Length: 343
Image 1 (tube, rainbow, N blue to C red):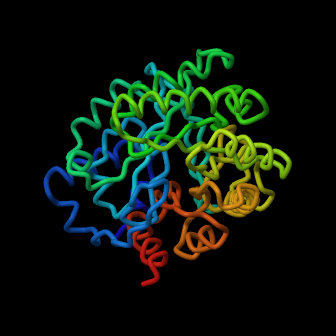
Image 2: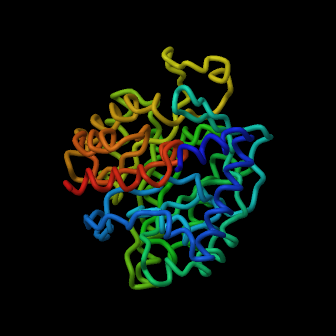
């Protein structure tokens, strides 16, 4: 059914249909119709970062930036949902068009630019979520910096977001690897990274005392890193006692194997099938460098149950999906969760 639905959806502009699809999902969910078309969530609990996840397959950040569709997405079979990236202040993001489907490559290029309604709007939406209130959904919240904030003041944006989302999140993801905010990836390197992590961990300790509840911090890194950079990042994550790493974000690279060469020239982050090998290479190197002392959440190019299994074999504790969900629908979530559960 989804393949037929997809053919119709893909006739229209990518971003327009993205917005429409989420609204349609939420409408169907609120009318009680969504469950009629979806399989029940695979229950295969796994504990990571001290959190019990219903299964090991989650939704990556970027699909539901403002946390406006949690209840509908929670019915799609995910073991966890990561919303955002959210910034302290609302911002429109980059100029449209900024989202492109490379259909023959099972891929997407986006240069959205952290378009979102701001952290207060996100918190308000989470307040309205029955799935969160009833604890039917493990919720990650992905935070970033506003485009207008100078890089030297980036930590202020992360701390401001962290302060506002701490009470709502099961874990908080620190996005320092989007290719669509100028200079952001510089935060992944050197003493700047150590300084950022140190201040985030200090604020986490303060918030733990305030709420008497520990919310883990995960750092999301890029796939466009060499072995030395990965080892350096791993050393700094270990020194700061970060709770988890998400590997990886989208890539700036364009593999020669891309079929849709005309769209390949569009700037932005490439996700989907073409990034699988690249992100899995980073995953393997990162797991080795971390020596199993910090869990890794794998994201990048998971379009089949086999792909999800390969991420786990490479050392991941959990798997996230985004582009695969767009191309294959909720059935992919069920198949991946079932495969990882050993059914």
